[in-house]
Amino acid sequence: MSVRPEAGGRLPDIELPDHTGRRRKLSDVAAGDPLALLFSRGWWCPKEQRHLREMVAFQDELEVAYARLAVISVDPPEVQAAFRAGLGARFIFLSDAERQWVEQLDLLEETDTIHHPYRPTAMVLTPELEIHRVYDGYWYLGRPSREDLRRDLREVSALIRDDFERS
Image 1 (cartoon, rainbow, N blue to C red):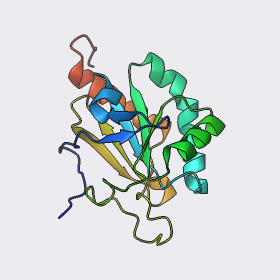
Image 2 (cartoon, one colour):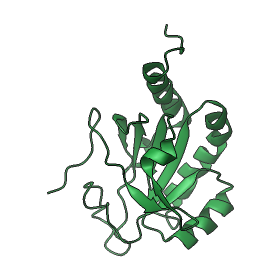
Image 3 (cartoon, one colour):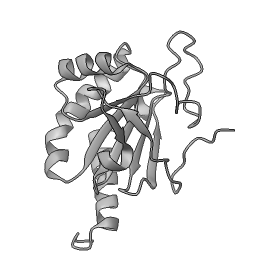
Image 4 (cartoon, rainbow, N blue to C red):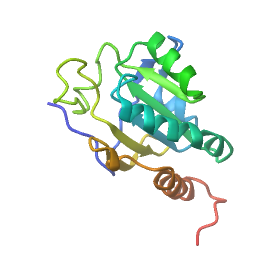
């Protein structure tokens, strides 16, 4: 039986091919930094396109903030590569085209019986893959804004970095 991940829990160290086909573990993607992980319906969803354009606008800030962003969808790597390039994204896309994790994580979007995609969900993780916050983005306004992610990533940074000033 699957259990939907919750704040305070830990995400498994998922290993999937990235947009180039290279297998990557989430812990390697995080690389010691806080990670915003977006579970996406896929390239075909206009809501995903809009939200990911917002994340592309955030990527410069994340790169200098020592924070990471990654996307998991059921799109195959070659589709992800084209979508990523079209967006101008530099962050990693991971492919669960074989649907290894979507049901294990209880994140299957049950209303879409054609694509069987992920339920749009965002998680902010520590480098150890502890779940700091979860956003249910089934309805678009449930997805995190840049401001939401900035706050969450700041909170995780304060927890993991000894030299981070806390006020």
